[in-house]
Image 1 (spheres, rainbow, N blue to C red):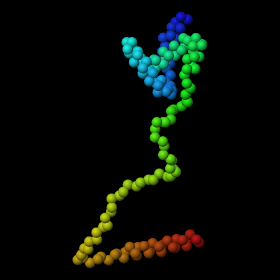
Image 2: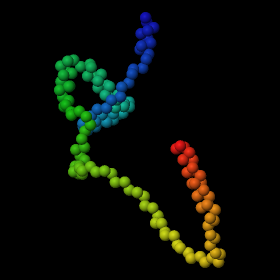
Image 3: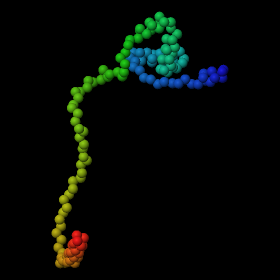
Length: 148
């Protein structure tokens, strides 16, 4: 059983990532404490300072713990609103987005050029007209035979 307990203690603790809202003055206090730690010859991260604060709170008796909690003002949860930002302009009614079509280069009109030819126009062959008419006549008797 001793080997199982040593396996558990050798594992790294599971880390959790979170975010929170803190007043600027208290956030500045973190930087002050970091500077103080450097002056004492050690460097510290913000997360390490917060964890040290948790350990200090855990070591307090109930009366001191309650006093420490009551000294901290309650904050509104969620992301802070930009009170120092410019006020928003009144919202315009929502309309469909305008789709702009890329401008095409102007098309020049074709230039007509008069060309003189010396050759006489060639007459169209009449063979095509004659070939089309007999085909129509051949199809007609096939319809009569199918009807009968």
